[in-house]
Image (cartoon, rainbow, N blue to C red; front, top):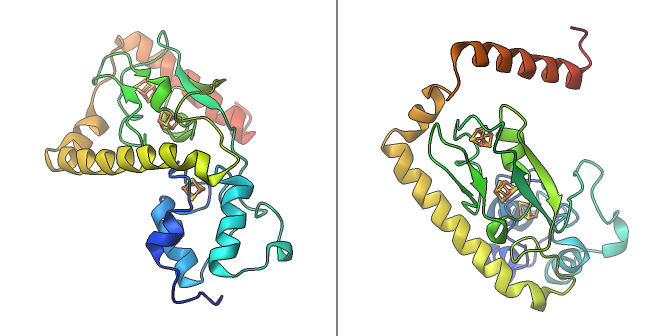
Length: 217
Ligand code: SF4
Ligand code: SF4
Ligand code: SF4
């Protein structure tokens, strides 16, 4: 267990995190990571979007030695700064699985309809890429309001505040929708393809999954 000064509240720790909500740290969101830091259960080098600015600020707040660990923990994936998601609209099947996972609600589209990304609100967190069953989302290099990397905490403040608000709105929106049964609807929604297309699509998905895992077909 690490020692945490009593003055460092979860709010104070969370204020130093970029609010990208990308889960790279291994926690459900920035607030969860802040709670783990507060409890002394996590180190300060687990936030790639926060980079050096966050690490140095956490070190000062929590009085942890910057030199005693690497800049990024070994088990944390790197983050592609200044990228946004792009949906291949010709391949999108309108399954809506990307909607609940996007922390900023940067994806618009209805079930069985083509979806698209609002670049200004996209942080490039990649959570939608993981959720998409047909691999039709990729990252493209772009500096937008939400994806811009800021080396200084002060310069990042406006962006972090907007991302925090967007995430709070997202959580509340999807909690309401879950109550209305949207989650079940997304799970069971038929895709907007013919029976033959579905068969081909399924074969492609399985082939890609096998290729990723190295399983021979
Ligand atoms: S932005 Fe940092 S603290 Fe927030 S979820 Fe991503 S890695 Fe964790
Ligand atoms: S569109 Fe995708 S990459 Fe962009 S913020 Fe939403 S989940 Fe993250
Ligand atoms: S998860 Fe992929 S296929 Fe489904 S709606 Fe989103 S972009 Fe389209």
